[in-house]
Length: 439
Image (cartoon, rainbow, N blue to C red; front, side, top):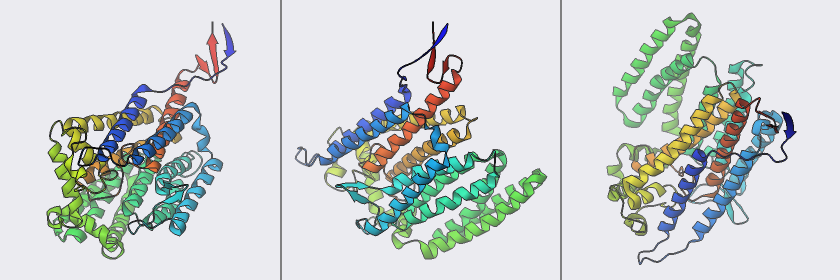
């Protein structure tokens, strides 16, 4: 047996990752194409389809390129720092030069193409946080935790100033999930997180609704804190810290809702609580989306036969409410198929993170990317069905939009690259770097 260098590295793609990507992308094109059909049955302006195909082609090219590369280099701060600073620069440029569309500045126009830096920022936060927490074997993990928060806050604030409250909250939540994954002692951390959540949320709920029965959640949180305090001596400091943080966050959430949130943001929350009383204003979009989804029933009305989008009853039917447009024409069956495709991608990402538990950097990257996609799907469909307050989060690979399409496929390329590296590591002895054993 001899070792012979392989002249060309083999490109390995997991079909259980690629096939769902292609199906979801196809569904997006079909759904968008349907929205261009006019009332008389003819196709209207299809330029949005051409643009989306270009975005998909560019994103898939990135996906295959990253699948071929070893992305371990992204653990180097010398690589991540320029990406972070570049993202900050783009977010600042948006506030200076970005066009104002519907009273918001969220895009940069380059060569006639709109770029949304906040979509880039979500991936940047994942890379930066994973890189920082991967050094926990050399430095104190809590020092790294707060360092990653310190670097995330400017990104969140710049996104909020656009203004984009939902995107800033989503970005902060993605940071937390990645950072939380990187910490040790997950049992303790989960209980501390539960305590903070149970005590903090009542402050916000009471501020919004005026109903004091939410105080029950805080009582439960105090009971959990009492048990955790007496469970282990090493937990006492963390429990006390959790109680202090809960009070601070709760007080801040009350101030945030009363004095910081813009009126339309408050209105979205109020419309979510009772959309039937806002049918002529903020609750109108949600009600129309519900009507579209419900009218699709089991098998839908068929391609091009949706009435809500064709008659412009459904606002933003090519972006924020694309799921409602699709559900109206393809019904429950089509919707479940779309959710199943997303489910396969999310499952693959989570399984890969478990398989890479010994590599914290890869594990955090995988959790961050997977949770990013899961949250985007959850928020978009939740908005369409009225189960969460209306937000402007598009549906990955389905909604029209270049930034989210390209960045989603870029992120999935990172997942495929990590899976390839992980498989290569498992095959050690059969495959060594770029060498194979040849008989």
